[in-house]
Image (cartoon, rainbow, N blue to C red; front, side, top):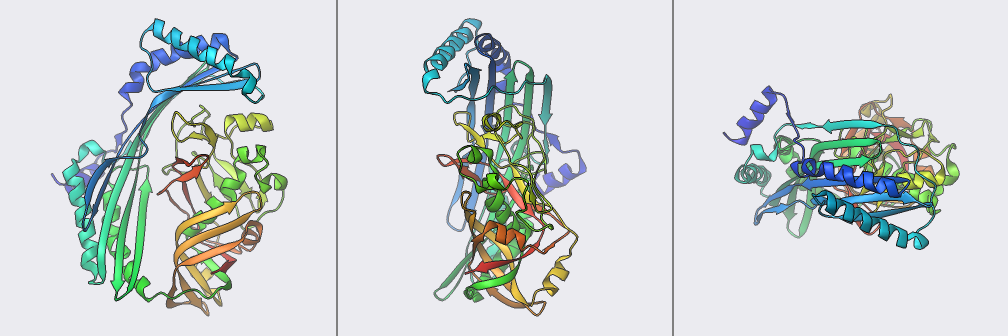
Amino acid sequence: MDWREGRKLMEENLAKTVPPSEFLRARKPWMRLLADRLGKEFDYASILGADVEGKTYSVSSKVTSVSDGRWGERGFVARVYGKGRYFESAFNEMPESEAEVLALAQRIAAAARSAESGAPECPPPPEEEALEKTFSESAGILPGDMGPDEILAALSGIAQKMLAHSPEIVDARASIGSAKVSKIFISAKKDLEQNYFWSEAYTFATARRQDNTRLFFKSYSGMKGLELLDEMKGGAAETAACAVELLDARPVEPGEYDVICSPDSAGLIAHEAFGHGVELDMFARDRAKAREYMGREVASSAVSMRDGAASARQVASFLFDDEGNIAKDTAIIEKGILRSAISDAISAARMGLAPTGNGRRHSYANKAYSRMTNTFFTPGPDKLDDMIVSVKRGYLIEKAYSGMEDPKDWGIQCMFTHAREILDGKLSGRIVAPVMMTGYVPDLLKAISMVSEETTLHGSGACGKGYKELVKTSRGGPYIKTKARLG
């Protein structure tokens, strides 16, 4: 059976439930014993166990590779609170006898007491509510349903389809990566488990005409399995066509324009403009100007923005964060008014707020920060065709590339692969590339005048913070019309 037949069978049946981690399940009783023992020594104690595994497959004109995914981790972190201070201890194996677990508890307690003088004081965590819950997502085609040779053959076919599109396509690459995420969280009143699967994929095409070379890529993602290969196959021709089209692109003339941003491009603005800027640990360190503007107007009344693992179903969706807080759907901006920040537990305690379920770690051995999950502008009443008609001279920005922000001063810089010129309410057929957008966040958001009906989220890539510590995030939104400086 090839992967196409497997996909058809999967569509005819219910998607498979992602299986639990037998590694974590076997050690759960010892996690409970450790949490109970530490709970006798401290005001609060919790244990997080993580087991994440995955593979990345890649095929190009020259190289074929299979590697372990960069998201793999397997281990535990204990957190305790006592005498006004938190302490954490990470370890990659859980003892499996009562004597060894009690000995580990003694070592953690001793280390916590010795670190008391150097740790910053913090209010106690809020009183926990009793909660026992297991969450298992579903996916269509799990890695065990397809062998490596089948996956590589599918990717090779996708790459060949891009190469066959035009003689000007000189290189093509297709890659897919996935991760099976299993976590268990134990505290005095909580017993939580989650198992889910996400995938991300890319198609890349390089076009060349004499000494002019252009690269274009298309990304795919979701809480999905290897059925993402079907989406890649469907997008191969578009990837190649855009790469060839970019050979005719010219530089954009610097200036301020009416612009329409695609959902992908709007998502980059949301992520950079008010994603990092409303992470509550930035408030605590006085590194975010947004702290001064809570409850105030920061965007036009057409703008609403949300974040949360419970806000959407994409790569950053889960039941609970890495501190055991249940995921939420947080309204950051409502009709132009800045309403809320997103938080980890410790930053929330210091600010006297309830955590929003955004405490996330790069791995069990890393600190939990306030981190974005699914960040996006919400839809509005407008249609894309009407938005284009309303533009006298401007651009439709189609594809996000990268971005930078300064949460303290609200400067923003976003890079896009290309934009399409709009003249007198119509697409002129001309294309500019690359495109850089710069500006002051409130000016950019207050200039938003139209918001489309549809919303799309994209979850390829990752977001960095701290010491280059990455977590999966998604971003997106509707089409938005605004005024922006391009260069």
